Each structure stands twice: as C-alpha cells, then as structure tokens.
Image (cartoon, rainbow, N blue to C red):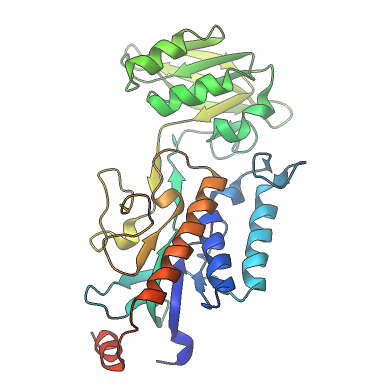
Amino acid sequence: MTDRNHHNVVIVGSGPAGYTAALYTARANLAPFVVEGWAWGGLLQQTTDVENFPGFPQGIMGPALMQQMRDQAERFGAQLETDEVTAVEFSQDGGLHKVFVGDDVHLTRSVILAMGAKHRKLGVPGEELLAGRGVSYCATCDAAFFRDVPTVIVGGGDSAMEEAMFLAKFASKVVVVHRRDEFRASSIMLERARAVPNLELLTPYEIDEFVAGDNGSLALARLRHTGDGSTRELELSGAFIAVGHDPQSQLVAGQVDIDENGYVATEGRSTRTNIPGVFAAGDLVDHTYRQAITAAGSGCQAALDAEWFLRDTPAPTQAAGEAVASA
C-alpha cells in the first residue's frame, strides 16, 4: 500500500454530481480521488443540446458541458482515474473504507457515491438507433426541440403524465401510449392530463418499433394492441420514454441502506448514508427531479458534508488503518 492509495475522499462516479463534488472537495484542499468509470460524464454524454443549465444562454452540447466540468475539477487538483470500481468495503467502526479499482485497493476516510441512474429502455427495434434523433428520455430537457410536431410519451405513471403535460406546451399533439388499460398515475394527474386539449391517452398499446424517415430522424412508431394483437402506425417526430429509471446502486447493495426502488437512502435533507463517512448524491438518490442542475447541487452538498465529516471526525489510528487493510 502506497501513499497514492490513501485518500481523504474517494468519489465514485463522474456525472454532474460527481464532478461538482470533486470541484468542491478539491478547492477545500482534500485532494479527491475520482473514479470516473469508462463512460465518464454520465447521461449527459448521451444528449445533444442542453439549454436549461444556468450560465449557458446559447445552450451547450451535453458532452461539452461534462468536459468543462471535468476540466474545472481537475484544474483545482482532483485526481481522475478513468476506470471502474469493482467492489467496496465500508467500515462500520470508524476505520478506513476500502475501494477496489482493478488490482489496486484504495483506503479513504470518506466516500461520495455518485453512480447515477440509467433510463429504463423499451428494448424495441429503432430505439437505440434513433436516440437523440427523435427518441428521448427527458421531456423536461428536450421538449422545446419538438415545437408544433406530433409526439408520443410511452409510460403510465405520474412521471409520464407530468412529461406529457409539459410536452403538450410545445408539440402539436401528444399521445400517451400505455400497455395496460389502467394507468399507474394518480387520479388527479390523470384528470389534469385528460383536460389538456392536444393530449390523447392511447391504451392498451405497446411500441413494437421506431422507424426513421428519409432524413435519418424518427418518423413513425409501430404499435401493437396488447389484447388482440392488432397493429397501427403513428406518424410522429418525437418519442419520449417515461417507463422509469434504474439507479446504479448494485455496487453498494448490502452495505448502505437502499429503498425499495433501488435508490440509496440518505438522512433527511443531507447526503449522509447510514455508514459514517459515506455520502450519496445525484440521480443515485433522486426519485423526483433527475436534472443535471439538481444533481450538481447535491454533489455540492455531498462535498460539504464530507468536508465537515473530515473536520469533525478524528482520523483513524495507524493500527485501525492496518486492521482495515488486512481485513
């Protein structure tokens, strides 16, 4: 074990939450070690124009925004490792936490978890090909690109209704496609959706395929009735998938508290988990908002929580560190 493998803070993940946490802890002279993952930058690496992140009045491409956040954290001294964390072992008794990266074991007084969440996908033909070319996973992010054109929302919960009502302010028509007759959405959300004049609820149908037009962008969705198997086609320019998110909490399952939906649980309005010195931020903990700016804000919170923890908690003794290292 070398000094390179001893840290004040290890940050796992590199979306807006991870890089913001890295920036704040670096400026606090904590020399954070950031394990970015191979697909660094999170979900924004999969987006095109980002027009709702403050400070960019002309908008910015998602990958460019993440590159700037990455550069800013690195400028202040964050150490970035483009690799994957394969395992963690969290100490329950005030010892050092262990983070495994390849063949290396890193000991750290604190850990910030920022692995994010992935959009749940339909897995139908054309979905991957047309992602960013008409198929989207965030109406709040991308609705303004679909002014005065027909669109669909796929899903049946409150989030789908919220996305549909927001999208209806821009699109000429919004069709909510759900595979069951009954919606999971609450009664009040359904009432609000039904009151929107350019919004239609279509059940029980599921998407069979997304089809590109001559320009390579989305032009058509093929639907199948889940009861009788009949098919129909919808001409459209935008499709928004709102069937849920999968938080990337597998790495820490069984060590930190996780709720029934897989999100890491935190204490109150803080980013503290049930393990002292372990904090969580971003879409990994966020059921509700899942925006780049809210993820960045919670990354700031996690950095401050970690800084205060390190300030107020005595460092483990050498013996305790050795015990953890040999565990």
